[in-house]
Length: 370
Image (cartoon, rainbow, N blue to C red; front, top):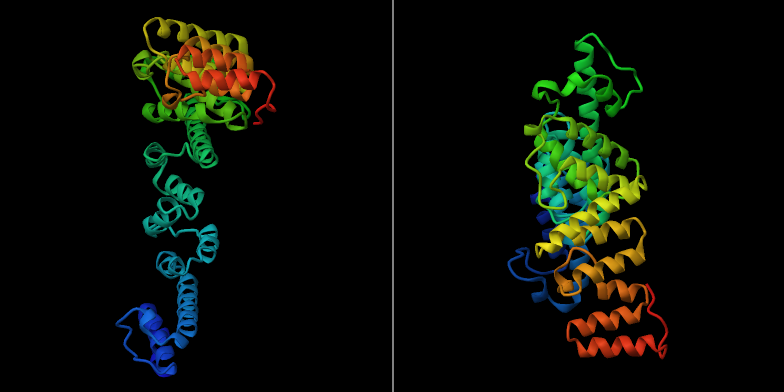
């Protein structure tokens, strides 16, 4: 058995090595060498030592596979043991060779969630922006805002870098190189010919997708880069800007830019007025999505009372479970405005909620926290 174990290790037959180590332990314990039944069928006094042998064999084989760079097969053993840390550490250090198949690693890192940021990096760096956009668009990342913001931030930086490089290359080819510190808007302002005659420098569907995704981002270093992408988009020929989305983003890049400026604390009143007008227009038509965006934007601008007033005005009759923003009842609870809470409940014929608002408003119980 010792020779078999040594030969299998030398041959790199790690699956065989794992089972050989288990067979050796079974013989040492005086039970059948054939692992044909569950471990629970073994004599009770052998359960703990045999379970320990399984753990030791799995760790041993898993480490050998990690040393060989075979992260995917190593994960088979460490996942069985419920010990993800060795594989997670290996993923952090993983740098694929140019011809390496990264799909098995992406499967573990991204799809199985062991190290999703690394998985996304591999997709973006190896397969490019198109695949990365598809990955983000096909995943529900709203439940994980940190990961969503990381992925969208990387997309913004990558597309911005690509666009800036191509604009500089275009200007250099024209014999009018741009200053080293020139921003995208500065290059466009100085050289309107860059977008003349339906010219463009990056895939316009990528541009539109990344600008839309950037609306999720908090204030940070990616915000000005996303705004530069919007400035480029709004200067494209009309046929390249896309048909515009649903209100309140029916003006595409103009709306994205106004939204991002509010998030950044710039031209806040003008931006909020723009989206309030859209909410009014759509509300008159019986639609509330624009109003929901407006409420969220007010919250991101830290206009809590205005957000409550807007939610009460536009959304009092809506089922709050179906909104993309906090509804009037939720915002009233957050602000301990129990008068509004009771009023909203009454408008919905919610007798229980109405009485709860009256009781809370009477000061019988301490204010709601958080």
